[in-house]
Image (cartoon, rainbow, N blue to C red; front, side, top):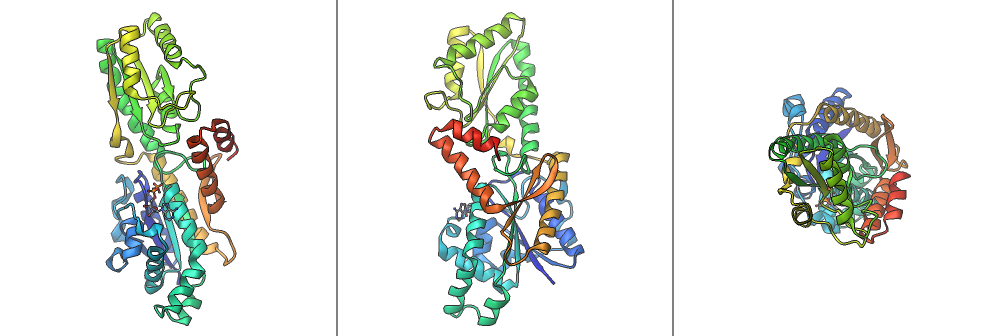
Length: 364
Ligand code: ADP
């Protein structure tokens, strides 16, 4: 029978537990042995009790719990070949033939590298006598399947990532809460949202909460003087009788001249130029999750089932798949191409080539 390992890696997101639960339940129903790697790549490198056999009892209650109960970690060792060699050895020792990884672009880059190195890792293990020739032959095909768990919704190839919608809900709830005090005191609030290079969380939560103005990395304000542009909009809304002002700022927001736009600078501008009683709210880690919304539970479950099916359908020559959603359908994209494109977008934003970043995102 197939031996499937499931793991979560990188930044946690709501729905990762639902992935683990569905892989375990669906995998075992298909006659597979399912293992979980605890603590992300660190658990894979450490092996031993970090790789545990799972059954329906192990995942009871997982569906509605945020984050990842099997743990996640940032692992420096896996970035180096000796670490990946240990990880490969641990998988062979456990008899695992496939790995389902739910994580962000970093974790999936690592997965892609691990898959491409797999034959040479086995060869090295055989040459150093850590595995036998027979084990090398038996394990020469390792299927690796990626699932995108990320609140940022920053992965190329998929319309939505597991955890992003829950995160938008949390941001909206926070803005709704702040709205009541903004309305009562006629205040302005400048709210910083997560998202690294990606402005999706800010765009989505800004729309859903009726923000007056947003700042995102992909589309810096067109004006040299964005300060006046923002003040004009805020003043117009105030002149219409609005008692509250909400500005949402992505943590990676930049101006036209590629200078970071910071929440405290916006606060000072609104205070000095418009005389508004302005406060800053940095939402921080509240955005990461809590209980996943229904959409993320459904997305995680459907995609985890697709991941197990992809493992069962994999042939030795097929490229590693990434389970995605496009136009409301579950699709399979090549993991490597999606990882590369995501890195290109991040690089384009870092090197300030916004036109390229937007066209890469639009064409994904
Ligand atoms: P995320 O998956 O949320 O983007 P990270 O970028 O921190 O989070 O990646 C999670 C882990 O994935 C890292 O701690 C590291 O172990 C592994 N990883 C990331 N990038 C690579 C890489 N290029 N090569 C090997 N492993 C990587």
